[in-house]
Image (cartoon, rainbow, N blue to C red; front, top):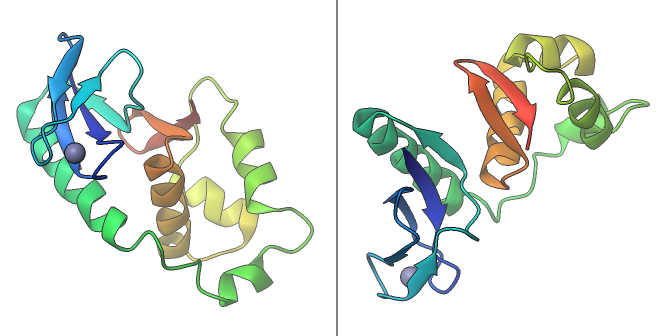
Length: 134
Ligand SMILES: [Zn+2]
């Protein structure tokens, strides 16, 4: 099993073979304890791993950018966090379109939200396109 992790020192997003208990960061060589690292995404497929690393690195670069303001007006009575924690409890997970219906937002916004929660390590992909709370 491979996983996407972030170095706690230099914040570099990288892949790791999760059957090892520790690896050295590809950039700063710090020893990363894989038994304690937050795994953002895990997969058996090296191709999927490569794609996921690219995706998380891109997200990471944009991570300091706050949610666009119009998002706030979508929030209505329910906060994003409470909707995610409600939907995310389901065994089978929830999809991008379920979240957009529930929040009354566009699918692309809902996708962006899910990505943020994935990168924060709060959600994971149960199966392709379905997300669940960690
Ligand atoms: Zn590092």
